[in-house]
Length: 438
Image (cartoon, rainbow, N blue to C red; front, side):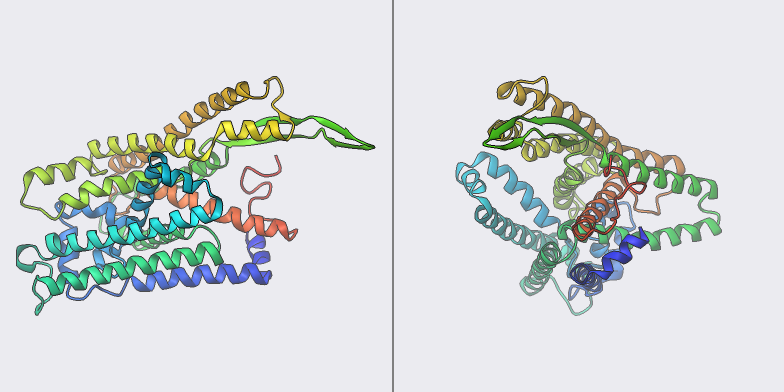
């Protein structure tokens, strides 16, 4: 892997892409230390350590710790992801948007523009909600001396957070277009990973003081390593459907006759269902958390909190649901069957047309079931391990774990494809990660 990475750096274009990605991510981390004007960070961090502040944990996780610092990126990129979920639903139910989505690159560009506008608008609403109901509550409980809740402070918070979201979207687009990997996923990835090292060091300090058991910590680390290995294997697993193309004779030339396959991944949806489920869970938590004196709203927030059994159960159900929905959107058996028939291809033993469609639907539904159960297990198991070991000082969850593994593999695939184009041995070559040269 180190050799392949060194080979990647030898290619000027790829080296520029890698350096640009690292530079943008570094700028993102720098923004984490630019606070929102007028906010008392010490009081916010003290509140988040209490039981009441714990409901903000999932928001803080996806913002990469920016929420506890209440930086210009306090809301993270989740408003944009929530807007993307809403837009995907609208595309399936609004005929005009559905027609637009089928108009090729130009239609996708317009839909992406609508999504960006929706993400910024949603961020403005969340920023105003935080400024009025959270920061400005109880006479400005979380404000610095000299600041008071009112229209000017609300305006400052909204403008700061909207600017932060717009800047994050711009960074994500620069990475996607000119860097390596998906910009949105990499920003979430960087926010999660950068928090792990100080948390691990803090846990080691707790071991020295006797607050954390060493054996439990080693068991916890062993589980993380095994989980990484297992997830990498499952992410690479696929079912290959054989395809045979009919032989055609045109003059003295023979066309077709090749045998190939259709790869269908066990987890075709990747990390998207978990990210979508987390975004949905944030909505009731976000809306109810500022009202600390309202027992009904606090009960709702606790019910949807994924650190509790009820919230964890809802999260697993949402992950399974989004796995089916996203797989259905991404994999269209009817379109594949029509494409095969158009080019003279067929699945051995299966007649072209409707039987091929039903065969592919059957295969995809079975794989999606196991993929959904896998994602549900990934969501559930880390919480159980944390409860068994008693280690809660590390923000470790199925969401963060699968995002890290999935984003890392997707990024390595992109680097690998660039290396293969230039006849270099890539990251995913035989003996390193499954899925190539089999």
